[in-house]
Each structure stands twice: as C-alpha cells, then as structure tokens.
Length: 157
Image (cartoon, rainbow, N blue to C red):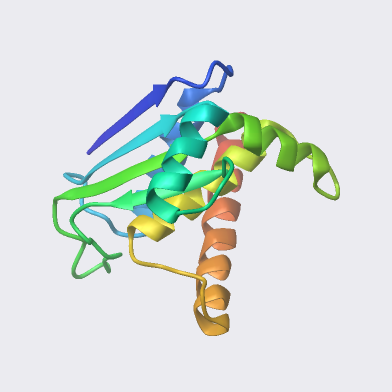
C-alpha cells in the first residue's frame, strides 16, 4: 500500500499520525494492501481554488476528496482489490479554525484525524446527502476514529 503525504500548507502537521491513521482505517475497511492513496495538505488559497473549481462554491473548505478507481470497502472474505483510491486534500488553516471553535475546542491533529477519515470514506463511496447515508457514514467515521484512538493509546504505553 502506498500512502503519499505532501504538506504544502505551511502548517506543521504530524504526518506520521496521518500515516498510522490511514493504515488503521484501510485495514479496518478491508482495503487491499496494494491500494494507493494520497493526502495533500494545502493553504487556504489553494483550497479555495479547488473548492471553486470542483464544487463551484466560494471560499476554502476543510477537506475535499477526489476518488479515482471507485473502490469500495471490502470484507474479510473479499478485500477491496488493488487500485488507486484517490486524493484527500486537507486545509490545516480551516481545520485549525474549526478545532478552536468546536465545543469543546480540541487540538488541530484531532480535527485532521476526523477530516482525513471523512475524506477516506468519501473516496470509498460514502456520502451524507441523505439522512440514512449520513447516519451510516458518520457512524462508521466515529467507529474508525475510536478504533484508531484506542490503538494510539496502546501504542504510547
């Protein structure tokens, strides 16, 4: 599995946490170890340009996902085949603002963990446009983050 992380945002981010997160999430979702995904961290200007170009919406956003091979989560008996999952684009500046304004406020990395997981689920075909879809996606997102967080706690002991 190739997980490429590129930080062009100017914000210091612990890329090793994002790498471990993706490894954990991809394993939980039974995605082939031969699948590839890229994470790109960009500044507000670059994110705004992408947001306008692809979503026709003004201003920067927190995360955008660009699926490639339309892969879906696998099962124990049938993992996702090898392929190119796509790109997750994050804007740490927007994420930092959201983290500071959350109730309760939380660290930037917690917000980036949530946004990266959210972006991955979009790459795998999940959406939240309809209430039933939102319930499924956000429930799975929560479960993945909890699993990752517990793994990180065990790792740091």
